[in-house]
Length: 125
Image (cartoon, rainbow, N blue to C red):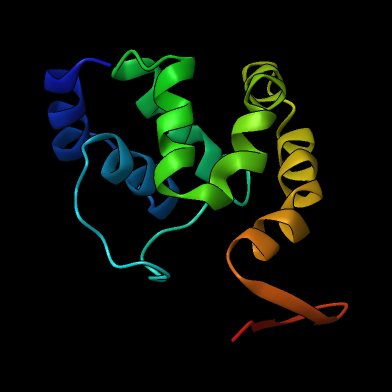
């Protein structure tokens, strides 16, 4: 990871919630657990900003695993990073969405939610 590029990226690039989440983890910025200010990418547009950070700041596999350590619910996303990247670079944006959606339930469980019905989740006590 190139720290100077990380600083440049946050001030000069298009930043979304998921890419900011990666940035916060990698820059070791204190954050409130279970805050709604942090999340995973949900579609190709979200992933594009994460991928931009990855490329611009010269991140590597170890950096991605550091994101997962800070935000454990990122594990399902990091596990399919290569597939997401291949789909995104190949401009298969629907495939990016499908991959991300296939990880939704696992991400929600890792965030501490329990599935109550098809589209309803409750935070576990």
